Length: 595
Ligand code: FAD
View 1 (spheres, rainbow, N blue to C red):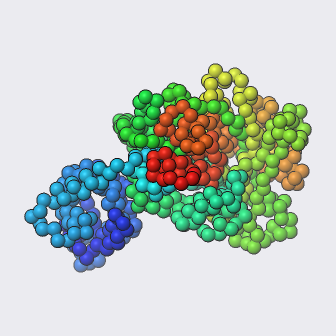
View 2: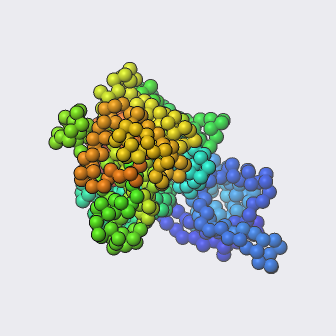
View 3: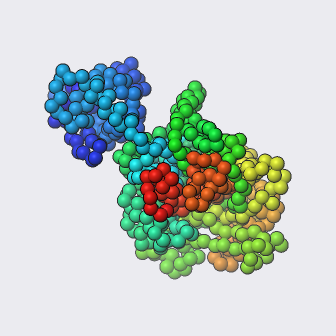
């Protein structure tokens, strides 16, 4: 309310180099000043903890009072003189003394010099500089390990922080506005933030690395139950605050987190990555490009960063095609799945509040070329349910408005009326021989092709093509009035049996019959198929050395996580990121232990 800080309004606590201040700041009303301050201060230096409206009569006029957490280190990284002039213009210059913990600095002393010395000391440290691209589980855990070992880490994320990302996802679902850089795939926390948050993994639930990841998640706010649950899961409502806590911890370790910032190019000199070209997605119209030098670049971009694959291919980085899976997402009423799995006990589920958990399923079958059930993968396609979301909803995971691909998410209680799961078939490069001229990126084009067909079938506006299970099995479209779907942007009755090549459709049809034998009632008039599920895993692998995690073709590049083809799912991506962190810390001489 007054110009400047009144000392007793400051409550500070010291954590190593850090001091966190809680202070009441004046509402900055003059339009000119607001913009100059906003342009000078990195938004991520401040986090609003609380906003209240103070309309007490003793004030001349009502004011908003913000309690903000100020990240001093981010501010220190600003060009020092600009910062000092900002502080002085705001009458906040005493904060410098607070920063230094030195209340005795005489007014006459040259404050600029004191401050500059401090900043220069910070900048002159010889810590290795590492850019981590992507803030999904792989990027977050790599950043954590590297920062703990003392590397100077910049975490570069094309999407927005969870607070803004939540608003962008809301605008997508409610107003059909797809932000190409901030959506269900891109943004803080990665693809799994708005997900079911299943923490099951095939890499061994009780091994030390998985347990370390789980304990870290508990440290950031997950329920300790995940350490003991047979099928641990979080749900979107728990993931979002967890990811925010993770970010704050990284910032506390000195990690510079840049949101809305996209990696566009690698800077390569003499066969080695020496930096990155980034652009700030907030200014796409002006395309503000920047070149930043780094000692190493960790690439944790997930499997939807098709532009990154293209860029790597153009830079002759080793990429090899990898098998992946495509199919449809099937949805049933949750009550039906509960009754299939629990029979009489189904009544105990009570919308996720009952004695027994909401029922799920996982089925894997092998289908031969002639559609028969076989015992060997080599004889045909492997068909399986994937990413099953009990009590969840079907969501749009497209990153481009001309493509449709879907997935599932849920909240922690899994209380919705629907159960959905991907029903997919493994495919390899022999399934798209006509695209082989595209080299290792043929699989990416295959995915894109069927995402475009799905968008066309849905008729646009993010409407998803759908078909009842019974019609899909009968190769017909008899029902135009579909059973209800959890997908919020609308479904359109479509001939999904004509969407994929016949061999994929036949494999899906055969697997449905097999699933029904295992889960009697799975083939039901209430079962609804949605198209398409294409991004189950990366269609390429960015090859790397097993011990160092470094790319086999480009020194200084460390491809990790799902996008690099070394993980599938939240936990395995996190574990991969963690191990890369150790390996790179060793390479950078920050750590001498065994990886
Ligand atoms: P991602 O999580 O994909 O993270 C990559 C990050 O890199 C993204 O944030 C992206 O914005 C960023 N990025 C990409 N390109 C650039 C660039 N050029 N510059 C800067 N940043 C860039 N897995 C489970 O285990 N359980 C589940 O319940 C589950 N449910 C899911 C539900 C949905 C809707 C989706 C989409 C996925 C789900 N998954 C689930 C899969 C899981 O999210 C992924 O396996 C996991 O997130 C992969 O982690 P990652 O760190 O390798 O990549």
